[in-house]
Length: 374
Image 1 (cartoon, rainbow, N blue to C red):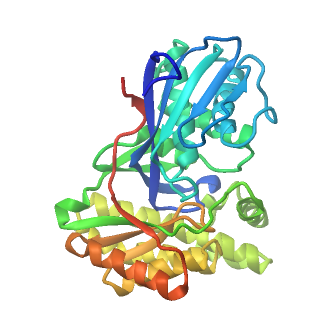
Image 2 (cartoon, helix red, strand yellow):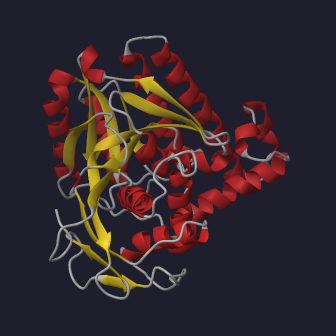
Image 3 (cartoon, helix red, strand yellow):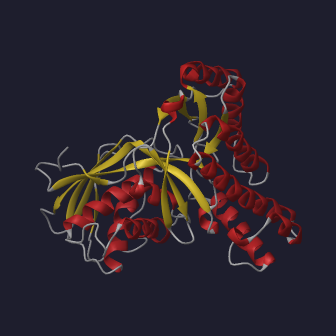
């Protein structure tokens, strides 16, 4: 991989992520348990040959995106280029001046599948720029700080009100381990998780249903959670207990809060189970309970997701749930490794029966986080 017409100063990569459990808890100061995916966004970078910054994408094609690193601000760049320009803006306004650069992007993280393709781009660009500007991942600009800068790019520049889970998974990912994140304290623990050691596999099914977070649905759920915390007089729903929920007067907000409160408990249960060395099959029902909560209380599933989950369970999966923000995207299912093919075939058959476009299934497992490739 090289920048257009010349060799780059280096190539950096960052992974997508699968969230095993802990959905819509990160912006409620809660707990999440994602892992870095073995699919990555790559960026080749070099000092600019011209007077401004230029970004080419092998997926998005021409024309390239152009902007000035010295002045770019929210609203100047839209579309896919905003994820790159936003990182430049976040770094510069965070006190890390960025020179004009030529960048080339490549990625095999599916776009719009709920696997954080945007965060993968942000984090790949962020680690590249951190090194190129002489502030590599040190105490001054560590992995958590870079994740926060990438999140700021998505929130403040792109305009997506996401939490920090995606960026933290991309920066702190580790092979053979889940990233247990307390989003209030930003404490990270790597929880060992290797399904193959137990004859298991994680099957990710991309339903290929439309998936977007920059719309009113995600923002509305976040607003409901903020309002519910206000009803209870707590800083965030992280601080609420099941017994508190009846004090929320609005039924919709009460359901949203119930999901967050019970989802936090499910994350802690899964972490405790895996820490204890228990057979991971034991977490299967907890994954399924998470999906039910997301469907009934948080109302972020769509028929494609529900059909996929139901089909995997009917085919013998130990547990399954949607992963990501919802309204489309992927599910993740915990299956016995020899059955992975038949489970995937069962989902494909169910989709045919419902008149849906064919899904795409693949195996996933914890992979390393962002860093330099060469």
